[in-house]
Length: 427
Image (cartoon, rainbow, N blue to C red):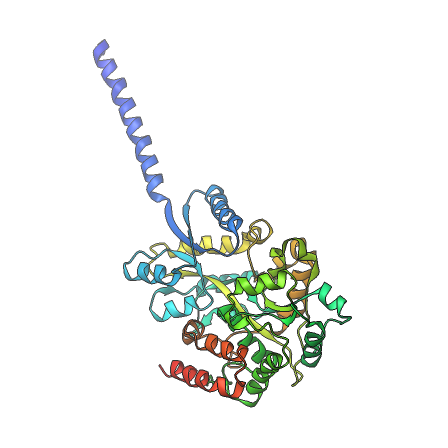
């Protein structure tokens, strides 16, 4: 047997250490390369705590496993559309994002969305999909595919000032006729029955009142429906509030912040807002209540809702991992409401049962009485289609509500809106 000198022994030891170090380094490098990186862009769905809690929730996912690392980016609503379109065009779209109600449908038609059919199938088989509120999954189905997962339901509700109704000796209205009478009863110098605005938030009165009367922007064949008998009846009801002098006359020129401020300060008894409107009222929060869905002249109930969703982009190089994170996010995002003060109502029914909602007078009322009668912007046709994005963004409905708030007869104001809606649908 050959014996080794001291120098040779040292060389062998060095070689073994080098080999071991190389092996360890190689394994570490391989592990690093194996981790998938995913970009998640999220709109700002609430006050400052929302984005902070959303980002920390992403970090909770990152710490829960080692296969996927998700990078979070908060996307402000200012120029949000250009942000996404530019990213898609340049090949730098995120792996997934939240977004506006019809964003997934519009981008799907641009061949930019990766359908989540396989995830919905998986959740249907294991029972996970049953947790979504009725109709919320259908709201994100287009062209035979699920183009996103629902996560939040935005709904328009009628709010009232308890103190103003009490001072007038009036009860909470339950019908259109009662609403009109109550608005008259509370109107006096400096105080009006109703305040609204001439911006997109004021525009929500149009689809809301149409749906409330069993109508909508479209008929069952997806044809413009603004001039139908029920639609005109609904719009004329809005005109009657102006004629009665119960609408704050400055409403047509108000921004929503102005209108909401007037409501908060007791300048109006009624305001059309969101489920979380009362939370921003400060000291007057306890004076704000939710009017149960009104029964229209036609005997109908209903209001507008939007299903906000989270979508996957076709540019993703890691669809399997992205869908894995998407499901985790969907199942663990309750804290975005309970700690992040997100707006809207969760699309998951199990989240709605949390004490955060059940013990909140306004939110609980919305869940119990409004969610069962909500309908989408596509009512009465139903479903979703790309033109809805332009319908919301075009401005013709804003012009319509401004004309009505300014006192123009509904029958005259609606005709240009009907014609513009027809043009959009014929594109």
